[in-house]
Image (tube, rainbow, N blue to C red; front, side, top):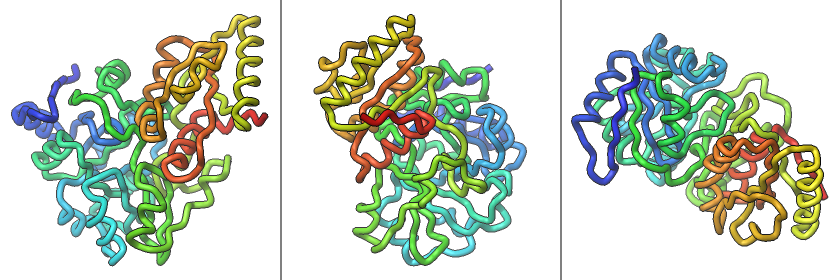
Length: 345
């Protein structure tokens, strides 16, 4: 049976935090909210505990996990070297939605690092996550709290529905602010490389550390042979429905989507369109509004994909967004969700 703790981040119940922290210390699994998505946590230095994460998620064991810490001082025991650029990134963006790749020390098990000599570390800003990490005093490995390949959960109700009785504990702490997983930045080479785009953008990073590159693998359809960050291998973020991105001049997109929806209806297929709030009345279809701007789209995206499943739609069409700044992170998740199915008009 899963221990459920409902905690208000503005009035944190420390006794409930202690209960969940003790389970983590005992090698058990606990789901907790972060500012990005809900995480499925276990002691990242305990191979047996980490194995329970893979089992709960049905996750391939060569996909690396992120270690979550409370205090920057904790990384001294975990990594071989902390570069000047790493210090600058930590000073500017921790706690917050960015993960840094370091060369790891042997204390970090290969099961945690996906068999690599690197380790991914971040310091979340969510108050509940911080209280839990402060109490447990361990680096907690925590991928997104969903069945592997499914949309990442940003709402407590979705975590409960999908993961209750698959883990030892769940902290329900409200909705996640950012809605997309953290930016992953590789700092093991001279020039920093973004391995997974997120709310902290290339431009944000270049403002403080100079040149930053985007990993070329993000533009490729093929799975990476050796992923060095979460989300770089395998199909991700996918609902049961077929997802298609419709790309092109906006009026053409609307015309094409309405044509496809009509054809689907004749075949007995239910369609829904994910779009900006301002466009929802332009489609001859059910719609799921993603919000009014990119920040709202990011926060609502995974919730919209899960809603499409709950409503049992067969096909999801989504508008395309700018591939710059935060839009790059949004499109990264949409392309993975669609399995690279893009209709160009």
